[in-house]
Length: 193
Image (tube, rainbow, N blue to C red; front, side, top):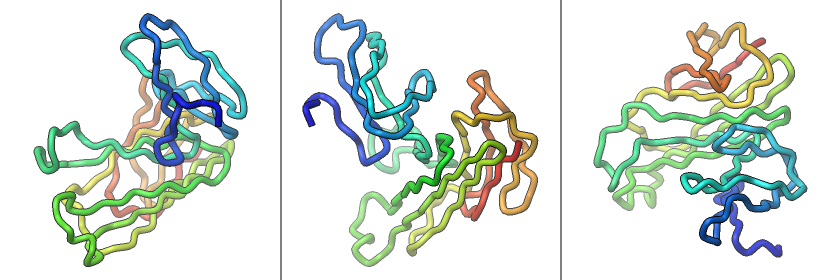
């Protein structure tokens, strides 16, 4: 309420611009819940103020735990590049969280004739498993075929990943993020300890 320089993009991303030149840190109020620092991937409890470093090359950004945030290739205009896969950044949560992705042609009014696709992702984690469910509604079919998953904040080392009942190869990067690919039309993914 009293923070006029912080804003939430949707209900999943908190952005805190730096307003003073040369400012090395700033206080950020995080709403209740659990939040990941976008840059460091550190998990922070909300409902409090936190001090955040503000180097020149980064703006303080926090992502709510449980969020599924799509990442498309950088483009100067719609359709500049053919999208081959969409990166899904999945942030671990030990409670159920819903995220939505709306897709359409991007250049036409076809969505007015219900030619769009609304995807719902449900993320739910426990100490030994993370499930990601997807349901879809609509008539639009995106041209890309696969998701590249980047699972952030998993509190355990996975022993296997099952996507619609099939074993999926995966890797773990230096930040302990779990990475793998699977078809865009999946129904359920289970990451098991």
